[in-house]
Image (cartoon, rainbow, N blue to C red; front, side, top):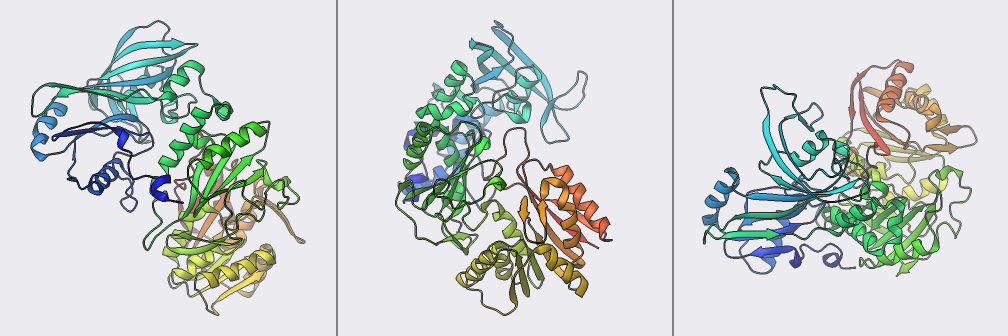
Length: 569
């Protein structure tokens, strides 16, 4: 697999116009205008500069405008410093005409033209709001709207932005009762992406003073949405729309896809996360040079034709091979997760991976098995939490409960933990954990492994007065052992969290995780407070942790994984 093919640094066809003074590009959806994380420079400017340098051309780019990450279209930059003054004056003086295309629901039928003239203020949630009349502060925003086409209540609008405020078109159209489709932040209806496209810029060339018009073709998704609305699961019947959706997801993961080198290299992550990437009932993970496609089988989504079409389009991305997992939404209903019809041992497309492969995560090596049942041996959504454990672990005694194959313990050991104990009811999982330590190059008697029911082990450890500086609590949503039956949804989380909190030394920290779609963050926090009270401990700090960036939730919903750092007095 060639990462330069799967995640190319740049595509030459994205350049719309270029001369000695200017370059204009068609920014893809999902690509940030500037890097949100300096350690992962996946923004358009960085990528374009690298492309220019690779061609032996000057790398200078003068930045005068930005587009939201999920907005596509024309983005203009200067190629010489001498052009900056003219371009800056035109943007600041509102002499550049900026025209957009937007798809909306709720635009009054037949209303051909409108002028949206509002004062925008920042709300408490960080989103922009239209200020009430008479509001004395804020920024004036003016957008001219022209109806281009309408069908079945859907409308395609041309927007001319006379000002350039944050989220201007999005908040103004939402306030007018016609939010942009695919914009959950401002109440937009279902769509495969944010249906906003920077269609055209009109300006004066800085050197010749001649008028310059740069246009980016309207994306196929906007036209398809206007004609048919949101495809939903029907996207799997349309090869063109399916390929575009897969391409958008891969583009959003460019930073991870190219993060396979250096001290903090990562080669395993999620590339498609169900409705969060506009591909319902589908999750696709990257493991080195291979993909693992997971089909959630509730309902009749996955006909043989749809499955084959999907696998063919995934195979076309250029990975070495694809493994398949077929699972219901509630995995606990399964009896045997290694059934061949659910999880074939051989890849369904391309070449096979070794039976056990080595992956990198933040520079640490872990083991995974792609053809050994529904599980691979590591949960990729915990990548950020393993990094936090590594950063917190130095000099600490660490307990990893429900340790599975002990990935958190490996991260803690690599972070300098003085000792770790990994507890899991599965002897096979613990044995794989021992192998994971060996593979990661960690060999010390300070790291112990216990194949035992975590409830029983915690009760015994508490009775002995055993205490830890860092406890990791990541229970399954459903588990049965000889001693206990645990269901996260059934209210068991507070009970098990109380046992775990009781093991913390004064000032100790617990990483608490709940992996359940129906567990909302507010309830999760409440359960942790209840657990602390039940064991007579005082919470000094409770901090919610951010969602994993490669696991975007379904629009309007919370991420499936809720995580918090809890510190006791």
